[in-house]
Image (tube, rainbow, N blue to C red; front, side):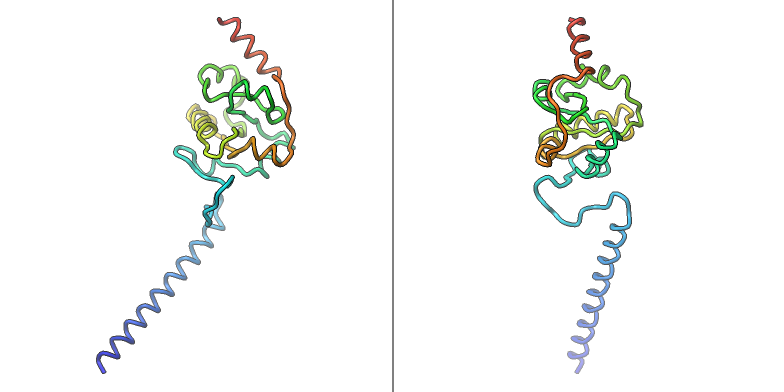
Length: 182
């Protein structure tokens, strides 16, 4: 008899523990859904937001939001790729601030940009190694509204969003400064 009571007690404890776990998970999901900058509940591959060292999740931006900001001219787009690749094609109106020459170009590229301007950085990689590093560097220089579009160039092209080729006027000025400085 004592043995069956112990089994009932154990089953009751396990049942209550299971209910507490289900309740806690449900509450956690509801709180996550209600807060800004919610965390993804599913592990996915491809171009989903994937934080990297130094890049906060709040710094990541979706293609939909980037497109909306582009269409309303509500963001400065920065291309973190090399000047050679940038000249071939880039997001329309984007400025080129190549991560590999950050110190050389930041003064000219960002001279007229307010520290609170909404900035979207992109490159052509899925790992954020270039655009993420650039975002962290700008944030450490006091730019308060820096965001990264993961795999931005490839997503932009795949969705047939506006691009242009060549060197925009601000980049031509930077080239002239570089030539005269030599």
